[in-house]
Length: 289
Ligand SMILES: Cc1cc2nc3c(=O)[nH]c(=O)nc-3n(C[C@H](O)[C@H](O)[C@H](O)COP(=O)(O)OP(=O)(O)OC[C@H]3O[C@@H](n4cnc5c(N)ncnc54)[C@H](O)[C@@H]3O)c2cc1C
Image 1 (cartoon, rainbow, N blue to C red):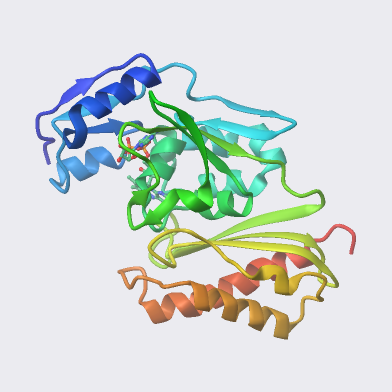
Image 2 (image 1 turned 90 degrees about the horizontal axis):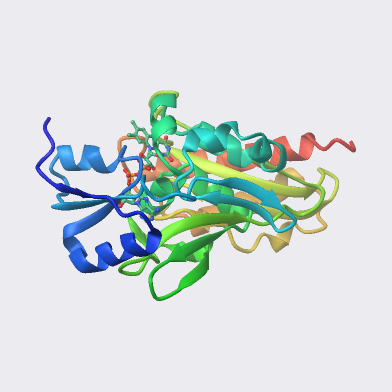
């Protein structure tokens, strides 16, 4: 497979990259790690005469933390997040989700921004970023705006990015004190394949009393979802009937797409299994029990 001829533009600043995007419109696309875009161009699924390379822009690959939480630059590689001690200590489920992407060759080249902006319905990191209440910083010559990740995904491969906007940074606020998080990826084909589905859970409390529960799911609709209505679990004991009620709530909100990793029916069944499994794992892991 050869790649069709294109011109590689190499801006030195985010503003310059945005201007190039605006100038070339639908003829141009940003390229970060290139792991998805190059495959799609080789397959002739998409074609852009201009690729705008983000690699030459400095200051976009940071991973830092302060009192307001974690900041990850869009050009940080997925492997850098997976192996970052800062991320592993404060947000272990996030490091885990990045570490479960594809294989180490992909993760070493592919970036955080490329993953999130690609907006595939099966991505691993978004469910975790949803339960952590992450914000995405979008930059353009006109303005820099912050969009909660729950509002970033609009549909299949559709995001809130406006023409000329570039995803610059991911901000993750501190998790609620005393909460624990978990990401479960279920691959129905092979261990390092795209997920059939992914479930991220945040639990504050324990099996006897749930103070707060959040659930994020991937692969179960056209976009990653933050499950709504989980206040029903607040101050409740985690019993089989509560788990059934939560699974019903999830089932009402998902709309799985049948694909080679499973039919809609199969994904609904597996969603029930993995949602319950994630909650039980966190409830039983409580260090105070
Ligand atoms: C073999 C293989 C297996 C994979 N398995 C998984 C998996 O299991 N789970 C998973 O979650 N992902 C998986 N992926 C997807 C992988 O994470 C993507 O390749 C990655 O998401 C794309 O990152 P990239 O930096 O290479 O982006 P690119 O390929 O360079 O770009 C991807 C898209 O994002 C846009 N883009 C890039 N950066 C920005 C930015 N900063 N702002 C706005 N738009 C931007 C580009 O214009 C392009 O449309 C897999 C990929 C491969 C090739």
